[in-house]
Image (cartoon, rainbow, N blue to C red; front, side, top):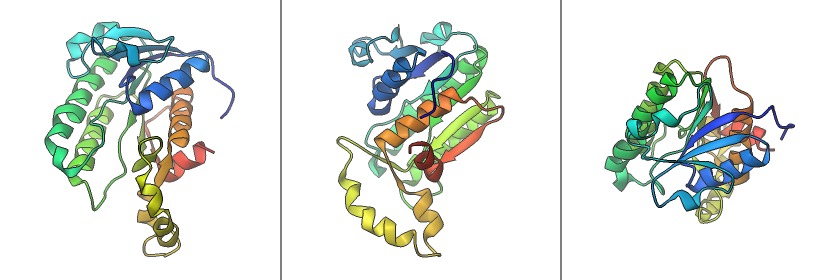
Length: 221
């Protein structure tokens, strides 16, 4: 990872989650100031050193007054362990949280919105990726320059079963007819994802951009 950029003010939702805890600790270690939203009772899950904001990511009015002006807004809220049976939860949590976060970031004059979406289109998990695609549209419509990362599956502690699929990915990436979809729906490691997220925070774009699986892997080297 390149040397840390000048210290930034960051507002993070989802900081108590799988990616959020690790990203928050990484950003703090790199000298950034992180103000993290947490529901009452969950704040102990935040990385030490965060400035805690108690509120509900699904209710804009509970946190919008706590967003620093012109900050980087990192949105990591989403249903854990997604599967097809959770279609209703994707709309109730993933979509509703973006409907709250994007206009709140816009009102605060945020300079950059960082969002973890999911690779799409895909033949599987249609309700999931279609909801995330709708979330992307809302973020883009806000007018805040955004970095949208599109992993398919992040390998890490508690998320290791897809390692068994690596031989198939290796094969499909070498078949011309399957190469593009195998790369777009490829697997990324947790360390690669955190490194790519930190890079995104430290390199705000002039215009919105998409980081797909190949870009995430490259940044994570």
